[in-house]
Length: 93
Image (cartoon, rainbow, N blue to C red; front, side, top):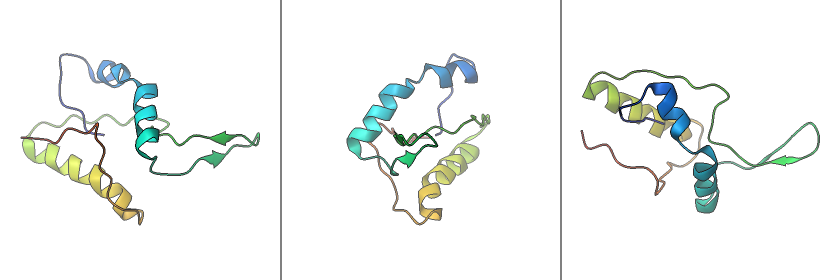
């Protein structure tokens, strides 16, 4: 995910995103992957969140566009189709 700069610190901005609401939206539109079976035998819902966030500050338009391209290419590199989500706002520069 590439998030635009705002009046908050990166940790505050990433925490401000409602993980539960975003996850529900992704599941409503069709999650990008299937659930996994945990060690306890429970089916876990797919999650778009990595176990740890990697925060990188992008300082110019070229860096922003490169980061967006990287994120958009991730499913394709995994042999999956490109993903389009109604919650994603295109970057206008």
